[in-house]
Length: 389
Image 1 (tube, helix red, strand yellow):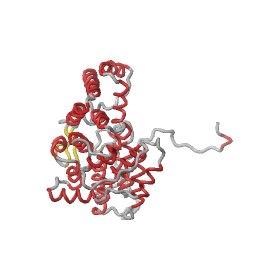
Image 2: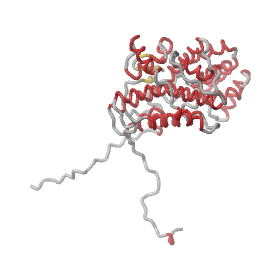
Image 3: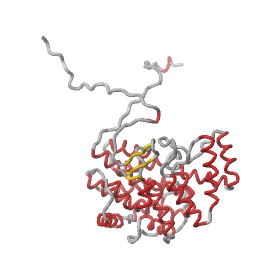
Image 4: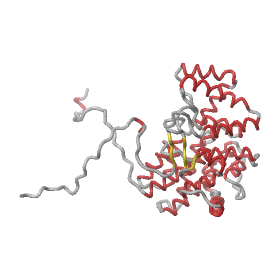
């Protein structure tokens, strides 16, 4: 009996599983970083409810949690802060690159370029060992606020304010942008927003970073990809669009009619709805609480009154509720930030989540390569140009 020949180079066709467009409802991998629970409208980081973290922990503690898997002890937090604060400075070359960018370029383009330049400066670019990737992650956490603040100052024709090592991440960012640290309540509201924005499972930008990482590219390249995805108005850029919408409405008395007209015209209303949450974003109540505190402190009740009017109509007519971008936009505006810097602030926070996923992907990697269903022309032969019609 002749033995059956087996081709050693044969690779069987992968099992095909059809999914919805946009991968909606598809589970493509496992993660221990965070969980978005649509049934209970909850979000947990490493098992901790995000609203509890926002109220009880500073952003630095949450960053450590996402990187390391556990909340830090007092000693661990002190060592982590020492490491982060010691690497906030950026080189003169990096500062020059940011300053040379066109004044009209979006701040997201500036921070994307800045992160890419950081990668060019790092001689360990191809070293993705756990220790080196962790060091790179902390480096990005420390330097991204400095680059954003530098761009903020340069676009206003102001001098760069170097980072300080005696301030928290939130305090330091305010000082680099405005030359002073505001009241503790404002710092707390900003810090809360960073915690809430830090991580959100396999969202578009995080998935982009994992796809790039799966090719064994470097952490900086993956982060640049995340920034590119976050820039879009259907993702991170929504917080900017929310504030533009509120400025367009301007008068709280016009909010309900504006929303009714927008719904009648089937206009896309930014800051509402979510692919996973169906009964409301679990982060919204906490951020709305601090947005209201900003209104109380600054006397800018207009934006929260418009908020209430828009929210009511959307809930009554469509049973669709705000996502985090809806309260974050006016909160940042009342803190004094320019609208086009809202999404870079999002980057400040989300770099922690991205890095955590990049490190997780690296530890148990398989290249992400889905299939597609071809719907083009059937296979055909090429005709000579003289025979083509």
